[in-house]
Length: 363
Image 1 (cartoon, one colour):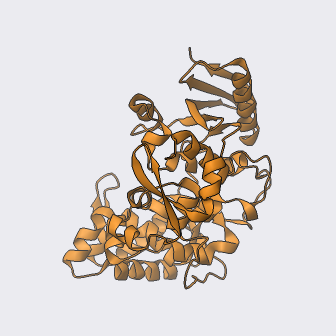
Image 2 (image 1 turned 60 degrees about the vertical axis):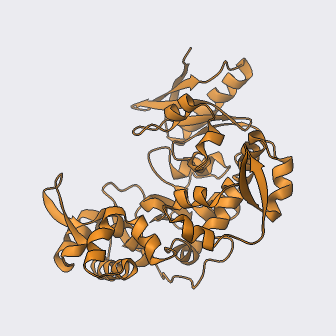
């Protein structure tokens, strides 16, 4: 039997959210990938884990479309193994990951993996230098047959489905240029996909290591993969624990860490921080009303993490060089905790090259 506080503390420690300082090389979340969505995305997540991101790190980091088609940061030195790790487990898995784009391909007798390879090959020929996404998509629409394409009402043109485009980019050896909108794709220097990711970058093992204990469905939901494929690749070196009446798995090597873990410190987690990406949302936020506040359909807030517990949400408001942080506590915060939140807001403002105008705590 494991209580949720142990689970939360284990994840704080595993994800190094209690760490004061560290380097990219020993930052654990980069093994799974750090989602880079919004102004408080990947680099803020790294800063929260003690990494100095004030200096440009393009030589050390690479930005790729990977899990769920979202942009994620990785160590550039790991890109070959990452490419192997994010490869779909099967054709069925690939079909699930590209959503509605799979139907016309299947109807035409084209396997999804073959389709991704075809798109990747075409992309590789198009992107010989930095190329805006729209230009790549436009060229693909001229080169690919009908099953790959759809008419886009907002654009008023026919172009390739979005998810095959995103998932084929890594297969083509393409990265995203940081800070570009619309995205600019470019070739990854000396790219070569590894034959296998190895245990460290295996997505199932990494999820268990950073977001465990977990079930195959939790991992499948995180990856947008079929549960069947995840179960078929479930690690053998796991122990079973019970969390809130549910049997879950944990890597055996982490059993002692789970038993002794304790989350400490205060952090303003970005809306897509890995800590909030766990698929057992009822563990993170047992109150359904709080869960709806934390994960709305549109416009996610950040979360206030204090000593291993989520205690509220926060939203930034930037005007020129001034940043205001609005905090919605879920409980009465003692003065010491409020001071810790303000300290973290000052840290966020500095990260954004802004001046903190104030922290507004809702009653």
